[in-house]
Length: 211
Image (tube, rainbow, N blue to C red; front, side, top):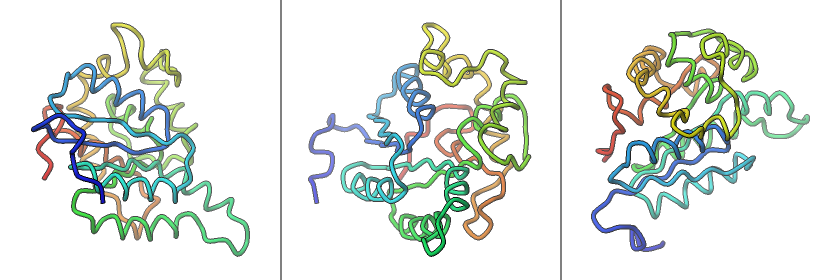
């Protein structure tokens, strides 16, 4: 096991965010930049990594960071479960095992979004518990509320109007809407949920007091 926090700034809590989507990475990069956080928060995003690779990565980071957040887009798990070949372990069954094991690790938090990250953005504009069939359908509803939205790095990091700063005033709304959806239930995983709000306090500030 590596020496915890040996290579980080003294006295600062260390946070890692794990996922496999570009949107999450760009959003949290902008959050860190805009809020000038006094903690180390290092987005660790694994582009198109397998579910097992993400699970192993989260376990590894838990030896180093004060807190590790694994953001899971459940629509990917659902789609890959349907596409599994006969005889293969379905992705939702695989995730259920990882979820149970990682939930027992004190400094790991699993934040599930069903369907995908765009659902979190949509909740900045309105409450919706629609059971979207996939991320494309979620994106269509987001575009109705946010017509200029583009799923590109250029848009997310636009100078003086990046995605985080543009939506910052609506963050308390998104938090309340996400809270109303409840928490992820591994026994009923297809119900709409968005747990990203757990990263924030009710007023929209980043929650740096995780134990």
